[in-house]
Length: 45
Image 1 (tube, rainbow, N blue to C red):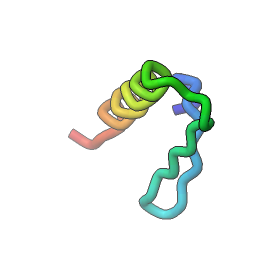
Image 2: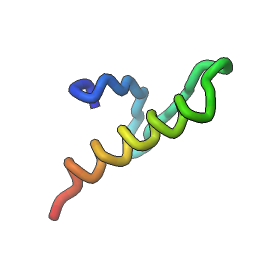
Image 3: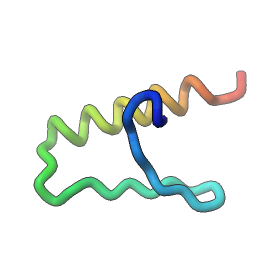
Image 4: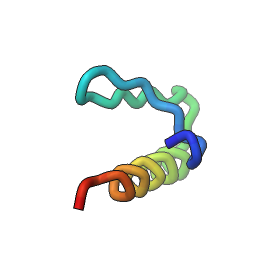
């Protein structure tokens, strides 16, 4: 995630995503796309 400049908080098996209240829909779409790509990359095959 850090390599993709996505900063999250995690606890156990939960990921907390807390975007700023001024985030646009485009910002949120980009962030979730990066999170999905990072999770796909790290998922066991």
